[in-house]
Length: 327
Length: 123
Image (cartoon, each protein chain N blue to C red):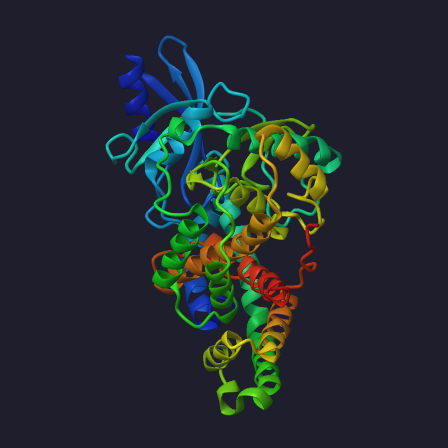
């Protein structure tokens, strides 16, 4: 049980008996099991923390340490992230690989189907969100312990998702396969520099306070070094727009790009942008197919994976099929 | 749909027994560590059940319509989702725009069955 692991870990590190209270598991976030709790020591010391640990089955195979290193890289910077405490790449501390962070108080995250998750604060949160993305992309990947991709970053990502699709496909997917063929035949220019790519930067993967302030960027488990256009295209994909036509459901696209350019020091390359917007839908479809495969093979019965294999799957199949018309 | 209906129904049944039923027990115990997670699980499972019911009711007619639409182009290969999509994929690889139009129509029908607002381009 997480409470036992947490009590043992904190007692060992604080050097005193501790009590765990308010333990709560969050719903969603299929790549990790996420718990929050309050830790109170015999001396009265008290902290609220979040534990993220690997589940037996998840949507995406991820590097256990990469997420923690990325959070460490930005802790205390102008990119808001939770404060990291400790990571164990093995099962000893928390029962499975995982890490601890201090809880971000008062934060809320948007759901995929929420119609207006940011209320009247969309523009304000959006400016902060795309500015933070630009700051991430201004960072040095080596500072986050990220290796350069083995080939052209775009083709490396395409190869990554092609391999995931090859491993998880269970029936013909002509729209996806045609899009992959187009992407392979039309690689974009290499970026002027490698960036830290969050890998899942989107509405729903950050906390805000409900009053217009972005509190923390979350879910760094797919972080890697690559082309900054990758994150921007994923963040601006219509799936994350809450049916609004705005980037992330927050800003008109031109304003989102302007905020990102100002913070990153990069300039949007229209050819790369077009390529990565197709790639975003390809990535999405492969993730949704992998989720379905988990269910079909009986490795998971999590309704979140059933949801992923149904609603986002149909969404991206439709948008990608229509995108093929213009290629 | 990415999840074939029999697989989805089987998974839902297993989830109801193994995850949702215990989750519902926890909903009455708000102090239980997994009560919050249980609420989300039960809510998502309810949505999946509704989707599965809609798919069972309307999926066969949608499939028949897709096969009928593709038959002039594909002949007997139009029958059955996987055979049809393999044939449409082969046609699409040669630049056949009629195959793409059929795939778009099928994707539109499948998405419309979800009862959600249409995708809005971010431009």
